[in-house]
Length: 565
Figure 1 (cartoon, rainbow, N blue to C red):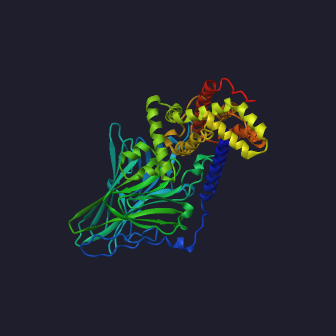
Figure 2 (figure 1 turned 120 degrees about the vertical axis):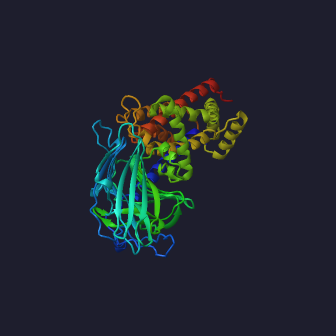
Figure 3 (figure 1 turned 120 degrees about the horizontal axis):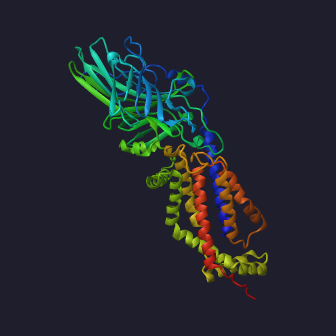
């Protein structure tokens, strides 16, 4: 296989990949805002557990989205909380607004921060938690909890490491549930602790539920290579048995119900660069489920975990805790939570092997960033390390190409001698390759090995919030967006053109020759819509390859092999 066919194969793989990604984008289009009667029925009340004296209630199967309070609730009162990284609005049962103070919505200097949680119909996304008790009273996420002490504004003080925001619910049967939200400096994890105090005369049984509900968000960026279009949007969950699983919004109903009993694990709603997740205690047993209730703004998509159940005797107390992540997909911060599978929320790929490769690449990229302090130069450094690791293969590739270039006159002579007798021509060429120790497929392996690295890098650069709005130099102010002036794609066209001139062309038919002439332009147009960071990778990789190939050609083919008579 000559180098021309290698380039054509690689181009075909690239086009096939892009077509597959475009097909995936169409499959992931948000569903219409309408559902069947089944979805509407899901808006009923959560059934309670059987009240067996002395037993911990078991979480039932959930077929509903909105539990009803069993007592006349007090009106929910909003509380604002401001830390160094978050500004939130919540009541005891619902976190209804969350602004990420360190993440502007756009690259503009005066941009408002990203609002992850919101209650307006177009951007509805909230985190909710409440209790259900069969035969007793319990607060729900809709109402019941009130601010303890009446305070409605909290700010993390300078020098303070954390702040607690308390709520309380008191039933007429003597049961009190005190809920405390704890916010920590520079942390996107909120600790939620519920303490059940039974001052009544009868045992109280109940179970806690936690859920995330939203409508599919409209994409901010559109276009054939917009990374946001290919980023996963939907629900995800993790269990020790089945590991990481996820479901797109349009598959909520089609892929069947979810009714999974899990110890530990987590549930979440993912979007490009940001996510929210409920993380129960690692020894707590709960039931995961999905629902599509109708609400303000159309159909909502909901993922819930129910449990653990508690039984509280008169005069006794019980406690349950969980964590709520609300923020960006920061790899190190997520790993610091020490929650199995939570790192998969950084959805580098649906394929575990590609996600693993992307994770390795990000680890190296982040290590380089720690040295140079610039993500663009970190990408350049990553290319150097990859080229160094693949040097033995690429050296063999360029050496083989240089030898083929050297023996072009001999190959041309064989083609002239055997004319249209392809069988004899191939036999003669193989004899020449064997005699001169030329490997005609030497150029294939390095390119095929680069393909998964290229794709993994694409997903990694597209998904990494660390690179969001990160500048490189001059005109490149956002490595995750396309080059605004197409400078890098034009440089890439020039590099491909010069590389093409160094490749041997013996044996190329006219059709191949025409395709090769347009190949740099095709790649240039395609790369014009890629994230600038990815094009920077490819330009650096191509430039180093061109330099290495030029040196090999100079070393091994200074004097062309003369044709034999």
